[in-house]
Image (cartoon, rainbow over all chains, first blue to last red; front, side):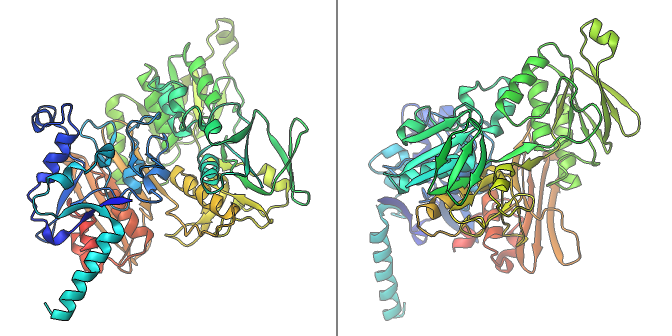
Length: 163
Length: 417
């Protein structure tokens, strides 16, 4: 199953992904609609010791947020693997248990103050908007194994060449 | 294989769906005293407030049982268990055989042993029928007294206030939320709720509930009186007791299962009797913070325990590993708050980091022990709370970023890089 993988070294904190995320979740799928409605982004780019680090939901295998959800709104789709509190029969009540439970801090409060907000991986869109928009290739939508193999090869090369 | 689950809430349902996911062929049955689709007790205050209907507090889709091929034995009480024959005896006389049994019977409201506790219009708040009875009684009422300023009491208070009732909350301890929040955090939350118009009487317990007087009954004014320890008398038509819960261990007793306050289980959610597991509010599990085994009656832990029990019931050994026993998220009016673990440390060994911005109603407190985070309180800004939770749960050393912990932008990035 493909996941959004982050190559932290490549991120320069341009925040394009946050804009693309807002746009993709706006009424008309455009940045204008996102700005008009103040559609919040579901990906965060946090400063860590002077370095930009993109953070978003990993759609865990056993999500703590799903266990924590006392309304039953937060669900993991058994087919797509997407974890979301939107579009299910049960509605989010904004109790913040998922925010308390998520070990990655990937769930936030919607600015409306009434529901929890998180990445829904663009609801099955072929390539999530943040990945599509990243000009630095810091975000990629790939198989985890593929990404790990590349990373291992890269590490091996740098070890061997001493760079 | 026949998996039988007693209990139809967080632990029971999570176990049932996990069982079905792991084992597509076995029979799964759920026994529940209440004859109703699985609903969330945590949403009963929303039902009281009128913001959610009965259907809207169901925490699984309406076709949940059918889709997961779960046999529902609702409206029946499990009376006793025969562990030799591996059978559960129901109150209608039916005997149900099981291969693996999960006890997820939950807890009940504790009613303090005071005179008048059995008067009319005195309620606990644990079941949907309680909520329905409260609403029925409130239709003719003006004043409500809520006894206990824990989560349930305060949720009920704000809910009924929204329905237009005059609400007074009485708490024996000198602060609200005494289980989990320190005085400063409790004070911020108290002011927020008071600003709404709810009245509080703190630091005074109740002595008795006096039933309606003869005149009151003649003129159909069902007002009770709540007499406090110091003799003060509060008048109310409806009284709600929110003074904690006790685990429902009766059925486990009949099977000779070991019981402390709840049912102690090992890391695989097994009781001391073979083939019988326990999970949820009725189970005593390991608290990762204190290392002690005890009750952890909160939703996320119940779910995790139910899920873990299911793995072990189908024969995939899976350790629970323990959760943070005490953790809760609240928002009664405007100020969200989260507390976890040892939030009110006693002793000189603990190090406390805190920041307080009264103008923004923001308070952050982190409790450390030997370079490890063991507890925290967040008020106002609950962003990234889970990161602290993960640090507490994993007993990770925080010496590397000790000075950064209190920052507003502290994030997972600091752990990953």
